[in-house]
Length: 396
Ligand code: LMR
Image (cartoon, rainbow, N blue to C red; front, top):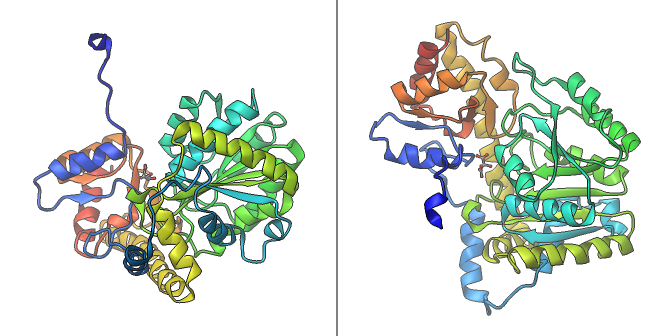
């Protein structure tokens, strides 16, 4: 039977990890997969995570199942982080968290829930979006549509976005990036979020807000602006939250799907469906990462240490954005790449073409996604002059 199976190309983002590892060039630069890197190019285990793990090693008493919703303590700790500690939605008991294997697992939970409980609903994705959004919703059998987001001259095209949102049929699902838009780095400002809310309300759309980078744009609270605006002004919202980046727990697969319903009873009904979706996918989520996050958020001291390090990481990335623009100045390219300093989060849609990205890889061993997306955290003070010189060599 297997002789009929064709080989397919590897994932466009994850495939870069292997290609980079195999490159023998000592000057190689990894601007591919979205992981944070410190000034030495490493992806460290965060200080608070190390401390929480040490405590867990001593205190953990069982490896028994934790149930399809995961650890209730994790849900209790994460909901205020996402929705705000004084959230009226939490006070009204309208929100529930289902722990998931990372943000990707949360998205798949949402997709399967939509497919089985909201039949016929389509999902509208930003153009461009994280390529795996397409894979996840396609695998779940949901019809996908796009709304414009980035213009041909590489800027946020909010007018075109809004115009398309206004045309979406009543009741469809619209996926919004809460902050740190992946892949572009172009985020909505507060006024624009307000306008999106009005359209979502008037069209009766269901927002699915992907919140994978809380803390990497402007900070933990500021990054939650759009999420909280939706949560506090709509009856029904889905939110996928990830702890991969902001707790540096990538491989521990830690996240959750948050459901907000009109009232506590409807929330419990939806929650019961989520348990079935989780059970059919993987039964129980992995525990370790969520246990670490819970330890941190339940301890005022560990939470302080964690917030401090996350702020350092966010500041470093935002600083690197300006550093790249400055490094391009001697080549007369600072104005052309000024948008990099204004974008937010881990990524920059540089505006480099697929052909230019290929040349950077083939001629300079600089790895980024073919769309021209660069992981800004991959820059260091050592490699920036080299990267700037290489960019100058490949642009027209
Ligand atoms: C990325 O976009 O690089 C990250 O979200 C990692 C991934 O799974 O693609």
